[in-house]
Image 1 (cartoon, rainbow, N blue to C red):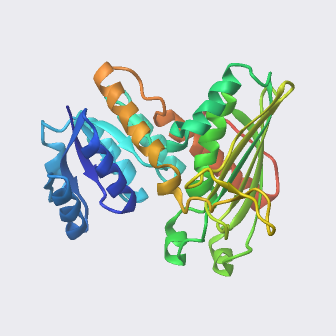
Image 2 (image 1 turned 180 degrees about the horizontal axis):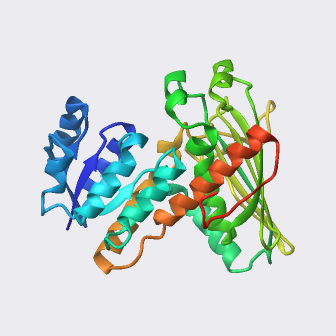
Length: 336
């Protein structure tokens, strides 16, 4: 069994801890969080020990892999230290909010031989993955248009938004990775625009709560991403792939598939799932399972460091475009 240490005992850390503990191929050996009380609670829940420092975790030879679910500003330091210690690494997105630090991290971990997977869980959603497989199989012919809708049920608190890195780095970055995964080629041009329709304080942060991104790949496929920090009807997650032979849609999930028709409404469906932990519960488990398989088999992670880097490059291009009103050409070699 693969011995894991968890960095970060917050909301998403709790999800990962439960998945590690539930796996027949892994065990949760240690948990470390700067909030010792939170770390102690998750460790006790899953029969792990609560570590007092990152150094304690990285010096433990029984730990083969680390799962980094701590705050974004800790990611690069933990990735680098874990790689030097020979630990395989699963890290939540983004790698960092500063592209220069991402590039520095890439250089420092090169040649260490450890596996690095970035937590873009939407690739592992069964519906999204089936859509991507159908596109790759040519069911709609050549992909001509890809439309991704991603809207949160409610805007996060201002204190979170202030340190989030902005909508493109924090929210749209998932959609950038999903677009690359489905299109199976790189966007080379990015045009983005944004508005503030919910939280006026975002203006001082040069951020937006509503955004649209249009990208073009080298072969001419067009990708449209639309985001909102508020959808009063629930967590809205839809993908549409369109080509000469037809269209494939990955639609919203609901608690049940019941449809009701009455005098007041026809084909009325139940409410959407509330937020990302509910909507992508299976995806979180599947991505961890795939990472463990790659450790045991020696294969490369399906969503590696370079995927995280390229999604970050697209996020930076989108922010530049939204602030300047210009189309931005993407250069993946230089990180800009």
